[in-house]
Image (cartoon, rainbow, N blue to C red; front, side):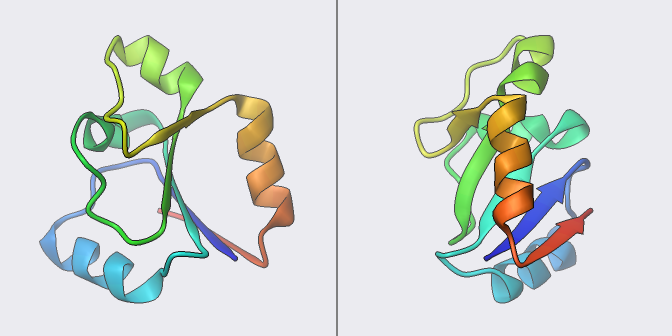
Length: 87
């Protein structure tokens, strides 16, 4: 499993690249400046996650397609992945 942690919003070409890179066994995790993606349905085939601590700071509610995770769950995802990519 590949985990992709997004800390900023991807542009159009970047989103296309992410879509081609990840599949349904992989995970995409939203943090900091990418949180606004969680307000809408996930456009990615990878398992979509959003950090609860960042979502709380933003004051929003994630769309049902995004799974809200704790910092501990985030660390577990990273530790269990075969590859970690930070964007």
